[in-house]
Length: 298
Figure 1 (tube, one colour):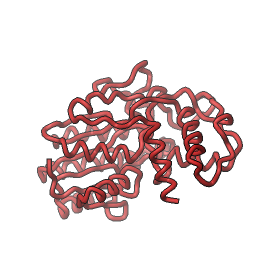
Figure 2 (cartoon, helix red, strand yellow):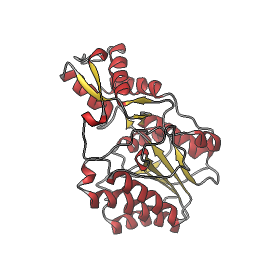
Figure 3 (cartoon, helix red, strand yellow):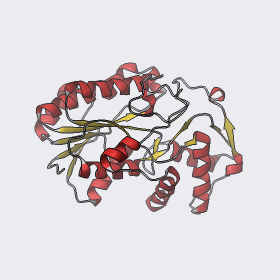
């Protein structure tokens, strides 16, 4: 389906930045807004921007993502993750536009033994997860044609994320201790952006919620070890002090955090493949691509 005017929020965030880059490479013109141009805590400002721009598709990767901080900043988390998506969806409905929104594995309790299906019951354990679920529900309630993509463990060469944190720590320290009893699929921001481009091209009348993550699974410890290993293979600079032998596996109990994380964040993506013919690459393949991008940036 062809869209004449696409509005993308949060373009200084990981996914927003990747979307902006991907659209530019495909010569697709978008209206890209950052926090300064669109304050998602200001309802009237959101409505004014939407009425002024009048997009026929809005893509909303903007979110409050400070998972632990959200436990003490509940109002702010809900303002950005629940109220703002509702207002965007309401305005999109008035314009007969469509909406793409990003949600999270944190809407699940993480106690299922296999990968989660979109139809499985939600039971968020944290304020962040609850605020993201509230945003999903608010979008659905407006009746706007929409796609909600639940993704997990998002990272990339750009921005603050697990990969860049591990590389920084591994350059500073000889040994690292990483949680090994939480499982999911690390998902690169560029994999998400490429998938969104493919979905938009194939989008007809589908509406609803889809899982969108890189293929495969690992633990945070497995992910951290792969980051260090692949970085070393690519001979990137600066060299790291910590090697894979110095990545020590610990339990969730060994590393207490204000917000409870799901132990199982694995998401089944068969519905996305069936409805749109889209399948994201293996997480390790995506990781190598992000590390190579890091090399280019440096």
